[in-house]
Image 1 (tube, rainbow, N blue to C red):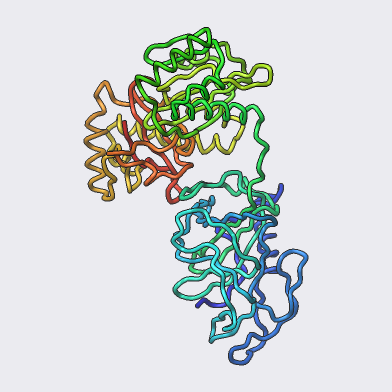
Image 2: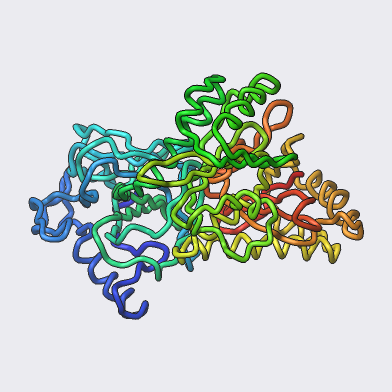
Length: 494
């Protein structure tokens, strides 16, 4: 049970087109007073809310006199996603899970009844849960209506303030978090922010219109299909299927590189490989990257070797992730057909990280998040080299992923590990003193498995794998992500 709500702002004032925050905050206060809850006039009778004058709900809509609970229409379209939101007064942290203690629901009526100094929904009201407390994934709006309530153990909170904006530039995946600055949001129709007075800070949910599907590049589709037919043929040891999608000359990179110049030679080679060393049964698709996405001045030997087939900038590299390694397939376009003309495995994860970086360069928001993860990793290595244990602990987050062997849940045990694995190791020539690249976990895939714990027990798709080491060929990784509004180191491994 909650006292009758008053119109309040979200923890952070949302910005408007080109106005300053101060003027905009004043405007928002005024607008929310206009469209938010109206105080009841007169003492009223038991179990009644005195009727007032008409009030505005969603812009342009006037609801009946006496309706008390605020209404806010969800963004148009199907497949709306729901997130929880926290704020530190400077930025929003959007979360792809619900641990706020309340379930976002839709009420069948906006009628409320007075109960002492508080109000409740009319006893005839029914409720449809939309985003359950405890959900570990992004929610999906499944009901219709516009009377929202946050349902918890103490009662049902009615909407106290809301606002419509453009879609945030970044949104987390299932179980993830992302920080969004108010300056990145404008008035719009694609996102609805709902705030409930459940405590001094309140509870905020975000409902976002579905992402408009961009038409896939035809060459990306063709390259992916050709590469998938190739790896499926490997999996099934189907030489005819493989030969139907390859062309020569064909480059094979690995411990021993081979350049095959005619189809008979290629067929003989593939038959011999399949007979001697059957390939893994699982190949998880990871990415299709145009050659143009790779920097021309790369010093990575593997990258030069993989591309020595004179691939053009519009050709593609398709990446797969067999267990514990990366497979790269080169796809060339000639005469309107996509043909696999090269493979390399294993491939350094730095190549995939390099490609992801080039792909993301045009997106300033992704680059900002990337820069934050990189900065945190560099601060972590600097603190380790300086043997500053307290700073390492400050930058770390519990639970901590310890190289697939165990997950640390206690602060003292984490301090012991940081002391032995980082502080005491700082003067060793093998100390990972440099950062060579980073990639989001969702782009790379599950780390470890089998006898070692998988990192996806702790990581969300938008967390980062940062590759570190004394040089590009030797080293490991540290894991970085946003937790409780701060960028933290989540673990490390080899």
